[in-house]
Image 1 (spheres, helix red, strand yellow):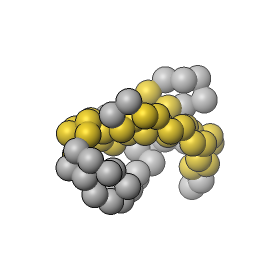
Image 2 (image 1 turned 45 degrees about the horizontal axis):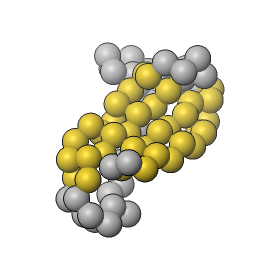
Image 3 (image 1 turned 30 degrees about the horizontal axis):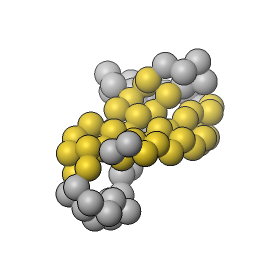
Image 4 (image 1 turned 135 degrees about the vertical axis):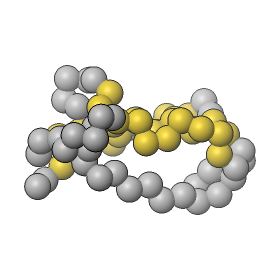
Length: 71
């Protein structure tokens, strides 16, 4: 939940630390949001199954989580 208006970046990285997709790079008003990733990269190509990492930046705060993409 974003508690005040903030700049939000949501990035997905592969296991090599390369950004494969940017899901959000915008200024967001306060509120609760749901974002869905379709398993594709920036060019629309489906990525292979494996470990990926999400980084969510909200203002000065950052959260990082691991996820598994399975086909």
